[in-house]
Length: 179
Length: 177
Image 1 (spheres, rainbow over the protein chains, first blue to last red):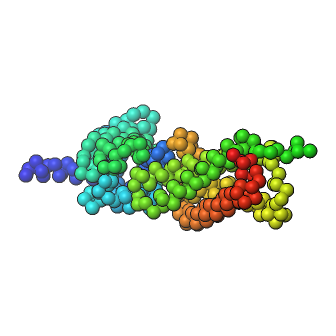
Image 2: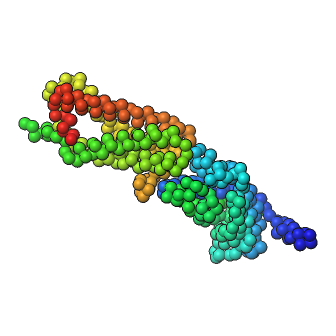
């Protein structure tokens, strides 16, 4: 009980100055490859909270929650398929979330976040590189990283065939954190 | 006397003709079958094969046009009536036009759907226009209409060739074999 209380205090403390990102300016896109054809998709609905001071990256924290039902995989057919059991199975796992556990400087405006991704009922480590760029009323956090769809069982059964839909999906995000 | 009017089409012209014919039939057949399939691996594969074949037809059509303009074709046989010659050359002209328009339409459609074409999964071709679902829908209608027109004209063309072979008993079909 006491541990739980302290944990919640700590959690509360670390989120004390978390700022929601500006959803209108921000985007989380992805590029998947279908028979070597790059196809762009987008996660249209997400919430992200950021505490990040480039001068003190270790005390930074980024958490994001993505509404998978609003995923646009680039075509009507694919959008319907994405909801089904073989892909995101949104009936059981409507959201994907990622939270950093440690952010480190990686030189000249670049940073490396270690964190945990929860997707389709699985939680695992995911490192995300990003850059931070101040811009008038806030800052931009931008990055791009490859994600193995099969490691998270996204595209099961027939769809596990990487000859048609490649395993690697490139995720590109751009978050605007207002001051 | 006959030096300007060869008896047969050149080997290259014949090869191009039959490759394009094969490509058109294959692309049409695949599209007809694939359009009703539900979203699946097979559908994705067939759509891509269709695009590869269509783009190949377009490239071959360009080569054919250049070849045709630089190499004399055999003249129509003397027994043909003027209106028959007109129908034949209008059909040939339309088929040449559609060999370009239908694949370009498909390329535009694929572009408007947000899918660039990667020929044989190896050679990337640029998107011709930006992604736009409404435009894609319209182009698809025209692409399909054009394809049906090709099939109708090509059938007419084939029937005419058979008529030359079996009714007129001239050498028109043999020139292309």
